[in-house]
Length: 232
Image 1: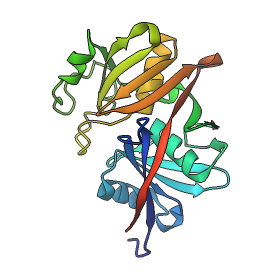
Image 2: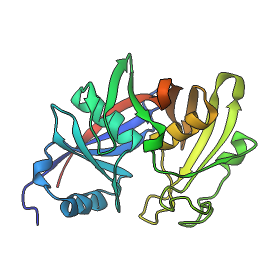
Image 3: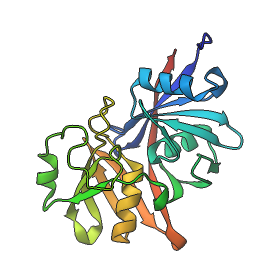
């Protein structure tokens, strides 16, 4: 059992232009306080954020990502957030090497869509339909053969010519996260499927930008804000 106090930076990732919204993220800069998978999973569950990142090596960008119930090889908003916080040029989650660049107020990562956990991408006829959706029960609506924890990513065009999309994400894992405010991995999958740059408004008003690149690479960008620090 961990008896050492742990400082956790709390960020919001993929904020709107006015700094609001964004998906909360916990970042444990000194992962030595939680050296094993079980203690990290326990802290992620206690914090209750959709993801918590443990930094094993801040100089090399080695990170470990957890939901309240699962360890992940890759996730979008934790990598954007950690890269911004630690001012990194490259991040190394278990899935592979992720390059980072800054562009004004946006932090961008390059990742492969195939690293994103599979989920159901469900298109609706209008943004209003997406906004009116009720949160489904855990596991409901997941296509056969799809990972049940990936859940459903509901989307519709707001302005197709401009690549503007309205989206909501329902993880369906039954771990207390009924809806994700901003989901980078799902944005990668949708970008790869549509084959074009996207400007996605998700949840209450978070903003995610994407752009397809060569050889299956997709760029994912957003704004990050520091909310404060917790001690556990």
